[in-house]
Image (spheres, one colour):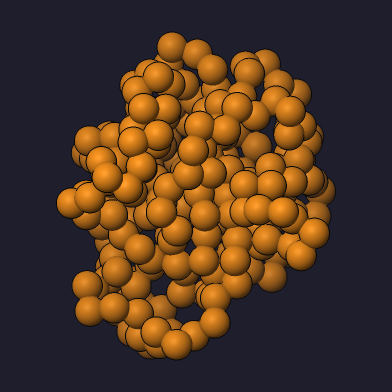
Amino acid sequence: MTIDRLRAALLAGGAAAEGIASYRGDWEVTSDAGPEDAARVLTPAAVLIALTAEAEPQLLLTKRTSTMTRHPGQIAFPGGRVDPEDDSAITAALREAEEEVSLARGQVDVLGTLERYETGTGFSILPVVGVVPTGIEYVAHAREVDEIFHVPFAHVMNPANHELRTGEWLGKARKFYVIRHGEREIWGATAGILVNLSRRLG
């Protein structure tokens, strides 16, 4: 997997993406019938899919602290809600990455974005894909981030590593993706977004 190939796939945009079965949200992983509450108001958010600039890119991920109100202890991309002072969702993703892992905005070469992804917890997430230099000294935000680590991008892009599981949430059976790497499990919206990116890359 090369950065140039990823850049080309993102720049191709909607025309090249037509016909690709990307998930529009958690609800679509479970069913193609549409969201249970189509009229619900979603909070705009953005995440940064940061890849290292090397022949075999590594994907930057975090583990959220157990004290977080939403998704405690889960593996996630750096990111969060779009604030009123952000001039775009891309700005929000870069700001959140700077706050959470001390990744300076100027160190990110933004390649493009994926389609928005809706979560069952009420967020509409814009995934922003960017490339960062190797050897960055990351610093975790003590209240929000428990751990910062990398996984091979090729591993999470391999459909053979995308496991579809079924569990119960709010009294209903739900399907969700899990991507294992060693002892870690990436799941939920983070895994769903990675599955979408894998499908975009073919």
